[in-house]
Length: 150
Ligand SMILES: [Zn+2]
Image 1 (cartoon, rainbow, N blue to C red):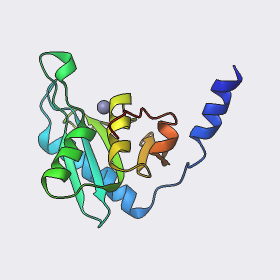
Image 2: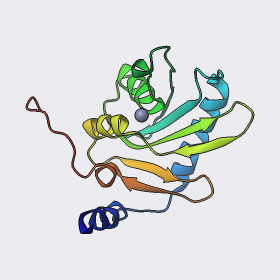
Image 3: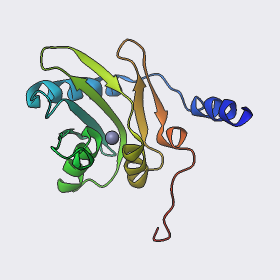
């Protein structure tokens, strides 16, 4: 499967160590996950850093009807847009149990599309909390969907 091997190599192309600012973003997501946690309803928080270095957070909403769920990343983007920020440089999502246990999450396919819609050069923090790193969203979504309207 040479295509899959090539895609895996491309996914690592932008792999970069986290900066101090990135680590602060991870902590902001953890703080939001703790502050807003409700079992089975609000368990994934995201934090993004706007281009002018403002940190904005959001919390996921688990809906009774699954397809209506709102991911933490999209919630953070909605908060940023509501506050007048339409672009951001870095985003991270953290699952938390409200008891101090966390997990770093890679964005789902829908979130990858939305992140890319707002900034094709955005950084996404992935990996694990023990070994986090960041990659460009274009590496997580190499063949982005293009509608005829954009
Ligand atoms: Zn998602």
